[in-house]
Image 1 (cartoon, chains in turn purple, red):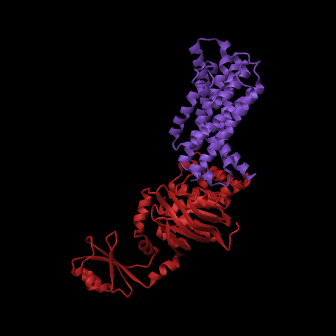
Image 2 (spheres, one colour):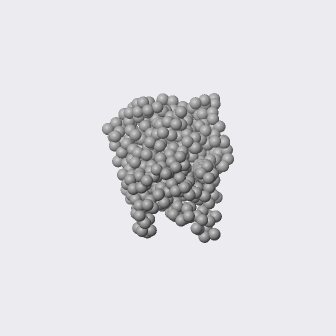
Image 3 (cartoon, helix red, strand yellow):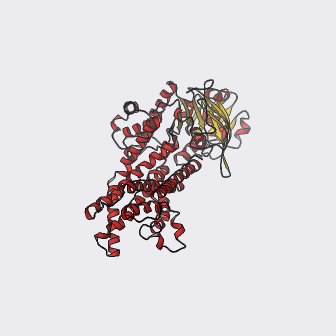
Length: 245
Length: 328
């Protein structure tokens, strides 16, 4: 019970001081709009293509919305030593880090529904299989957040976290089937696509919106879950090794 | 807390290396329950590393730590519910107000909302910060920041409080108020582990003092026992109008029973096991063209012990710290 009081207050503090700030909220709205607009201009296509690009825009919104924030909520707090205050509290490290990442998971998930809300006004989404779409959104948010955590813990400076994040984010965008189908990737790059957690989330999103997917939904979600557990465990290991050394 | 035989902290063979440097090299000490224990040493002596190991922020390479009877050797964070920590830099959240910071820190120890708020208000009142309660921490003065950081360290009413340089870099009035607050906590029975660069602060507040030099404890005693050997010795300090950059060469020959040394400020310090006659000394110096402006008998202090043990003058260490030098 005591740990959960701490959990809730860490989450509430982070939401207030970092996530619910006007720049973050506006970023959450502008970012999907910019991506959608960019895609339309590039392809010259019409509103009928919205359903095709929706999974990509949703996934990218989550990916950027989550990974960027951990550099602030973790790396920045570590740098200015306020994170020490959390490490000194009698809270299991697992619960502490879940509290520090829950804000990003929530915001990532909310970001995902911004393009969906926009799409609802422009196209018919009645054929979307929400039973797969929503779990995929949540799992992508968790996996991306834990990827952000892994990066935030591995570096010392906020700018390093941002740079290191891009090292993962940009290859992932182009290789995980978001905008280019994995089947059409060069042979050499295909195996690389399966190294990224986003590939499995995007597969579910494509399947739920357009009916085209490479693997069964359950398998995609189980693999994505494996990435979540692995990245979180690796981050905890790094915290114990690097920060309590 | 379940202290073993009245021992709040027991440390045996504690060691920690950073690459090739032994920051702490086999330290042993015990802190009694309710004691105010001073931990003194020059920059880089291993004070902060020791505190970090005791509070679970660092993992020892060797040795054992028992806090309140709990063995923390395997799990450095095992006794964190018993301790409060005031770090050497105020590390509260700049975006939160003073009141919110205290409530947040209390929540980390699982206190319920009403209890958090009651304690936060009382502490703000005790620390004379009520009027700044709703101001953001970022806008606080250095002294106010230190006070709020101490309040945050004790809001969960810890049995053992670690205070790392609580008065460094703040104004005289705030420092005095903080010392009074530390004394009050001590009176209430809190075990306090204090590191400080201010020798006179340690002398005034502490029951016992450990001196750490190059990662090793060189002396642990009560303040009275540390000073006692010096009580029999007489000390005198002479200030001259014209600068003194070396001890006049013939002083030793003229006064063979006295020991002469020069302080960094250019004062001549005279020590002796017997009485020191001021008149002959002053006359001798004035005959040698020195203008003696002041002759002051010195009370034996911890500073003398500190100088003897570390070879450093206390004000040199204090200045280093205030310039921003940090301990290991």
